[in-house]
Amino acid sequence: MDLDPKDYLKATGPFPVVLVSTLNGDVENVAPYAWVMAISMDPPILGVAIRNIRDTFKNIMDQGEFVVSVPGPELKDKVIKTAAALPRDQSEFKHADLTPKKSKIVSPPGVEECLTQIECKLEWAKEAGDHHVVCGRVVNVSICKELEESGIDATYPDALMHIGGGRNLYTKSGQIFS
Ligand SMILES: Cc1cc2nc3c(=O)[nH]c(=O)nc-3n(C[C@H](O)[C@H](O)[C@H](O)COP(=O)(O)O)c2cc1C
Image 1 (tube, rainbow, N blue to C red):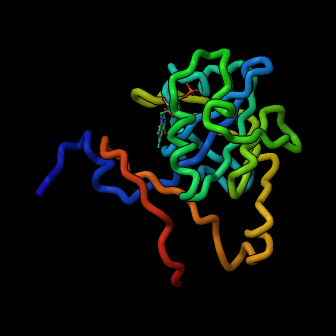
Image 2: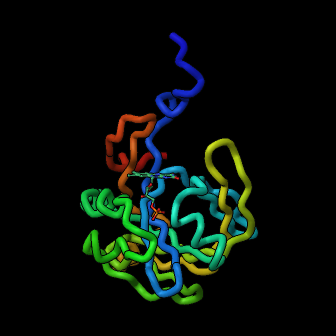
């Protein structure tokens, strides 16, 4: 059978959910994003599709930096809490009981409870339909102790995955095989 082209997300696998943190003055904003993609290795560039009505988008355009933190499946409820539509001057960190982790290079903090924190500086943003593709140059990557000890070349962050296309379901990363 064929699907409506607008339902193409139902014909893809799940995508990892990340938490994108940004700054609005001294307000630490954090929200979940599932439309995340690797864009370039050299230079290292990471892309996120963000609607321009989001505080995250406005903050990145104003301040020029963001941090992508990768949560494990056990953080699902807190991740969903960060999607609350709070006024722009209120931090979702407190609302979701998450801890800001000081970044090494950029000003916005990452999320302490996450498996990895990827610090980015805005390269460019381009309108694409109802979202903007926001590309960030990766300037620092931190991984948690467990990943470091397990040997990052043989394993991977066991990320929380989002089954999109209006279904709002979640799954976990699968088995490793080659
Ligand atoms: C699992 C999940 C994934 C999401 N992915 C995206 C996304 O990729 N792009 C987007 O614009 N919004 C996405 N959203 C919606 C935003 O997270 C939500 O509107 C949030 O309130 C935006 O917060 P902000 O205004 O502080 O940036 C997602 C929400 C959830 C729960």
